[in-house]
Length: 273
Image 1 (cartoon, rainbow, N blue to C red):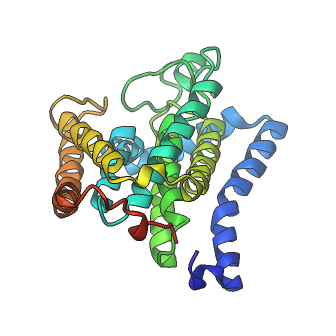
Image 2: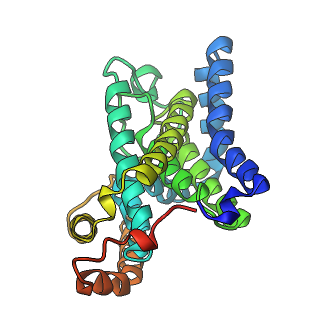
């Protein structure tokens, strides 16, 4: 850490951003479990959010797509090798957590509620309800950025986008509030774990490893442009726009990354702040 990060006031702010989201999600999950109002809250939120329109929620929900999440990291190629490495670690941790927690017997709203009794957008997914994968991804990316030294207004904006992505899963009618809160917790903790591990294990800062990671991310971006179907009609234009913009923003960094000498390990450019 640098001297700015060592400042007690700065550390207090970091702790608030680090623990605020998981504490909120845990308390809310406990309250929802004790009250038994998970289904009732779903019905209320699903009906209220319908007013925003299907197109709005279809576009918001793809922000939590794992392929789109990769796009948001691409602009930091070469500029922040530590962030690329932390994202990869966090994604692996989150993927394992979601895989272990997903249970085919935990049914989603379309498998429990009568058709027509709630609003459904997109495919009627029925199984492996908890936790919400889209929400996990959204809060992984949000947590990764919010735990950096960036302006508070930008952290707030990123967090609001993640919250919107989580709410979109209820608006689309395919996740319970408990699933969204669980995804919020998993994604945020995975981001914190990825940052913690990335600061201590520097293997991913090696230039050749960075080149491999970035190459895979770029291939995923190009592949998604032509082959990936997110399941929500009318959103392909937004998906392509995000991909094109993020690839363009990464172009300069990619050129520098692949032209630098093998001896440069990127260690001097790293270090989450």
